[in-house]
Length: 144
Image (tube, rainbow, N blue to C red; front, side, top):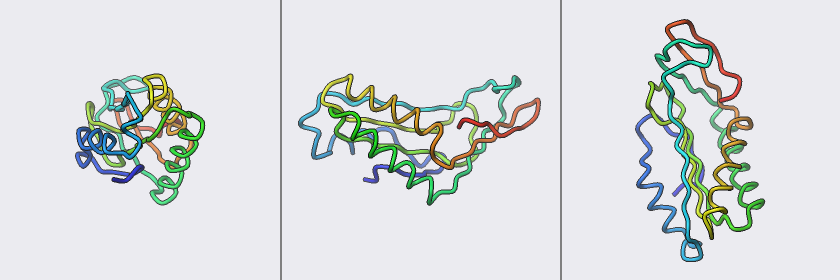
């Protein structure tokens, strides 16, 4: 199973990610899996009803950045034993999933901290861009 991946709408299955993480060689040392799933909200950042989000990426560089985020997060969180980061790049509607981050930790705090730290970095580091299309107009969002 890939640890980081750029995926298309509908191609990622949370249960499969969860089961894959439980098969990690480190899993028997752990007591927690924490998960974050980003979804498209229905209200735009500048107001208006969201019709769609368009995620674009420089995929090769985005994958490198996601792998770097993964490695940094595991290195900085000693009790975090494994981490998956899957980002959706596609046209998405309200309610669609945009991002999956799952962390395997020795304890719940280890897993929760890893997810939170990875999420903060995913929002700013990889070359992934988001355009919000609303009934009041469209614009690129500075923070994905």
